[in-house]
Length: 167
Image 1 (cartoon, rainbow, N blue to C red):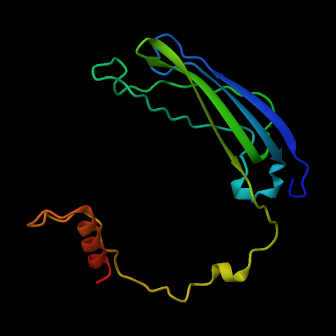
Image 2 (cartoon, rainbow, N blue to C red):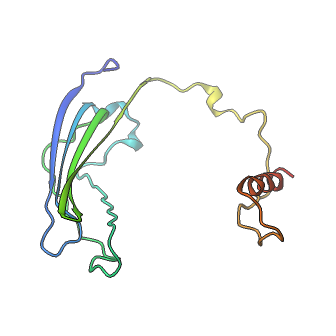
């Protein structure tokens, strides 16, 4: 792919919620094509010897739920080699979510694909200041102004804000 030898790696991940956890157990599978990370600039490469991951979860709860405002502690354990730079990935996740009759299985799929990969020096014009650039001392604020004397429609409000910005 893009003149590089690519590795096809399928990764399965299982998340197991412990008793008392607010999040649910889930499974995911990522089907991806990866190339050696050396094509990336040094600052963009994974730092060795350990890779980390940040997992953020947001749980929708009913008012008064014991999980309202709580976050679970998540431990991540990995083994194996770093797959490299992903050129194309597709991830499918399956998770059971509460439903009126108990739980239901929800499946979602997402992915990414590199469409163009060029190696070499960047063109000098990428670093030139645009001809229409102008320096400003401060940006005008989008803060909500005190309510107008008359009720504005959404369109009137936008027109007023834009006219304030371009004065």
